[in-house]
Image (cartoon, rainbow, N blue to C red; front, side, top):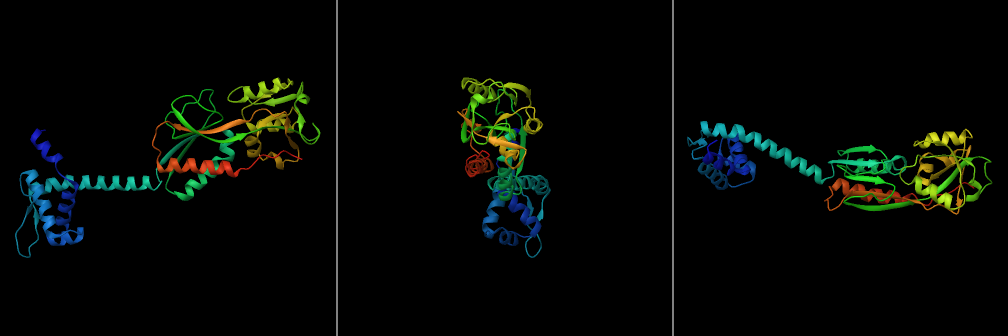
Length: 309
């Protein structure tokens, strides 16, 4: 492409193309000005500036009542100009939708949060922004990375260049079959040698099991599974009891199951901590910013855990 021609093209402004399109559709400078909300002299000045940039006329002006017509140069310019105006309009609409919260958000989550916190976050976001695009992924790797995610829920702080918000402390409670232990809190030493089902040794599980050992109990782990429902099915079947965090117990609606009892532990293991992470220094989209606010509100609304009587 000729460098001089390229320079001319880059000097064309969208307002000039918009004026040109309006004139072509209305057939006169006056009617185009009225449609655009400009004075006729302003529209004339815009077309004159465009013609100086292009080095030739874009309209034939016959005068009198006859409509103005595109010149051959004007036809070439407007054919491509309409495409640019269409893309500009689409861009403006996309920006408006983004500012209104109707963009896309990618959230990483894990089992307990997916069952208890995230449904409320998703529902409120969709109620407020029906056009938003929410993408969720659930995994619990040993070393999580935020990657391309906007937000990441995790039980603990993650490494890397991230910022975070602590949502809640999630205490560990004992889930056992009815009659396995006396009603009320259970002393940790009663778990010594007791059959237990448990999560795999990932995330916060090793720290919790070490806390149990430090309290003087060495339970006998007879089964491990990462699926909460599977563990609770084994507790119901009498295979063993389980020490699970409150969110997992609440998410499975254990308190309403008359085959199970939830007990506090004495002493209680340190709770796991639930955090929401995002890349450090990143400007949040309106949707991501609102998701953080809603997650904090939902966590605060959950209230304290309760063990079975």
